[in-house]
Structure formats: structure tokens, C-alpha cells
Image (cartoon, rainbow, N blue to C red; front, side, top):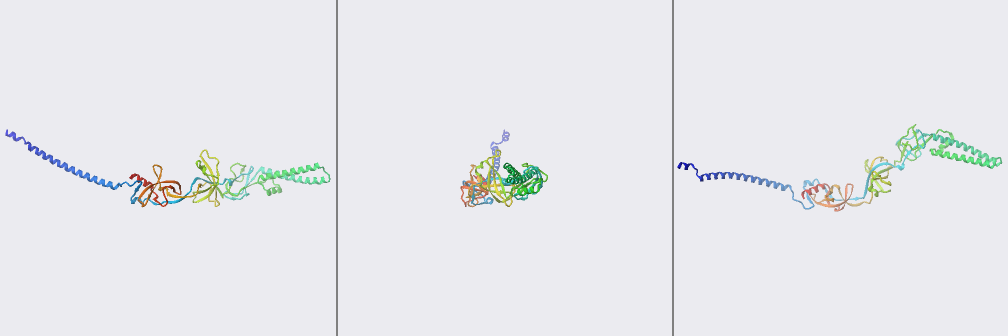
Length: 408
């Protein structure tokens, strides 16, 4: 009985050992938990500190503050003034003045015998460009010579008839018949001479034909204007007919040119004959050529919905070339002085309004709503909201607006 009692452990001793073991294990857990808490506190503290440095405090309403590094990218300066003028602009081409351009056709059918002018040559009014051997001209010359002979005979017959009538050798009726024959011969000669005029012959040339009695003559084709040969299609032996294209020669006065433009239908009320325009071409970017509107079409093109206008230009130095691309500006009002800002200084807001960013030191910017007008010379007219001399951001306005959106 005693042995059995000794083998049974004491309950107090058993609970004490177990409790000691549990306390020892709990100390390790608490120590590990404490270390973990310290690590979390340290990490959170650093994160909070870092976040507080990188995220600036919100700036006042409509105001944004930038760093010195960001300020280096922004150009700021005073609001200037500019003389704005209401204008309309259009594009087109340079062309010959069709009122001073002539297609030189042969008056009658025939064959070119001689060509007396070359392309790009300046010619005078009345100068012979080419000659044509024409059966019609030969027939007209023969008719002229025939009427000349009949007129000469009629004049001589009438002279003798008058002498005979004085001596009562012929009757009055015979005299009157001779007078009628002479008048008919004279009328036929006048008609034949006018026919020769239609062929381009002058009085001296007609007298030469009568004197030499030469029927096979050349028809001289002359220039009707002073100008330059801009097109030459003539060649010896070439058959020509009146009005059959291409014309053997085209002459134009290149001292006068046209700028041909097609303007939108919506702008029709702005254009009228006599208005002054300023023309520019790519070949002379620093030059402006003054002109005047000389033609406004009476109808709009049904396909393009555009109206054709012509502006006359003086080009005595022959700098402009037909078919050059050109643009023109028409001034619709007198210049007026307004505040002006670069296009890069403006921002279009979500509500459709425009704004600029004013500043006093280059780092603190305040948004200002403005009302704008027209754009000229890369400057925007400010109708309301800014005064000349105020300091604004001249560029990077969109950057400032985006930065403001992020910080507010």
C-alpha cells in the first residue's frame, strides 16, 4: 500500500511544473509579439513621415504653388497690347489676268507659213506673230484686184461720158447709167477693201497688193495687246482654223495678275468688288502683295458650296508666277488696341470658358477666367478679365491647370 502511494505523483508538484512550463512559453510569445509591434510601429511611422513630405497641403481655391524646379520650365511676363483687326482669310492660286490675256487664232483656215515670235518673248501690240497662207485670203485679194480694175474702168468711162454729154453726143439716160456703174464699182471696191481689213491687212499692205497685183499672199496674224508669249503652239506647215484649240499663241500682260480664291458660302456677305486685300505666297514669306477684289461670282458652286472671287495684283517686277499657291487677307474693320496673350497662355476649362494663370513671383499662380476674341499673329485678343501690364504665365498653362486638378 505504501509502495503504491509512492508511485502516484503529487498533484501539487505536477501543477507547479506545468505552470512553469506554460509561463516560460508565454514569455517567448510575448517577446516575439513585442518585437513585431515595434517593427510595425517603426514602419508605419516612416511611411507616414514620407507620405507627409511628398503630399503637399492643399493650396487655396484657384491657386497653385509650384516648386523652384518646376518654375524653371514656366515663362512668365507682362500682358502686352496688340492692334487687332477683323479680317477674313482664304487660299487660292495666282493666275493670269483673263481680261488682259488673248488667244491668238488665225482669222481664217489656212497653213502656217512663218513663225515670228517665241515663247516667253515680250511682244508689242500690232507685232506679227505668225503668217498663214489662206485660200480665203487669196480669194479676197483676187476680188480686191478685180474691183480695182472695174473701178478704174468705170471712172474713165464716166469721165468720157460727161464730156460727150456736154456736146450732146449722148443722152442724159446714158450719162446716168455711167454714173450708176461708177458708184457700183466704187462700192464693190470699198467692200473688197473691208474684207481685206478683216483678214488683218492694213492700208499699206493693201496698196502693196494692188501695186504688185500679187494674189498668193500671206495672212499676217498680229498681237492685239502688249504682253508676253505665255503659250506657243505654232509651227511652220501647221494647219489652223478659227477658234479650234489649241490657239497657236497665247499672249498675256504679266504686269497684272489675278489671285483666284474660293471662299465658303457662309462668308459671302463679307466680300464685295473694290475691297483691298493683302496676298502672300510661300516663295516670299516675308513679302506682302497688295491687291483689290475685281470680281465676285454671282452664284455659289453647287458642289463645293463655295464662291469664286478674283483679286487683281500689280506685279511689275514679275516676281509672282501663275499657279503659285497663295493666301489673301481682307480687312473688314479698323485696327483696335486690346490686351493680348500667347495661345499657350490660355486653357480651355471643362465648362468651355478660357482661363489664364496670373502670378507675382513666378511660383504662386492664381487662375483667372477671361473672355477672348480673335486670334492674330499668334496672339489671342482678351476682351475681358485681364489688363495690360498684369503678369501671367506665358506658357505651360495646361500644366498648371493639371497640377491644380491633382491638388484639389
